[in-house]
Length: 126
Image (tube, rainbow, N blue to C red; front, side):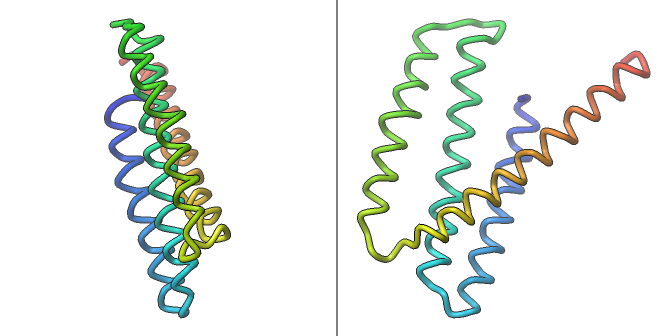
């Protein structure tokens, strides 16, 4: 994923997550709203770390050391954070799932648009 697509994903994912959490909050579901924010933020961080990990490992400037750093950041640290977050009663598991899914749908949309643009550019010889 290019840096431009990753930036677009982060911006759109954060906006969609915030909108979903605001909607839940307006309906009086504060635990679900907090869960949506946590789930969306966690998924954005996870996708960002995964993208950096794959770029460090498979990219043109291959660096095993950077790849290991991103691997250690993504898996132990992010998953430990989610275990701590689920220990709090204020965060709804349902809300987390909604927030996670919102970002996942946005990510698929951004990847689809990026792929379509790349195919169109190749077809026109760019």
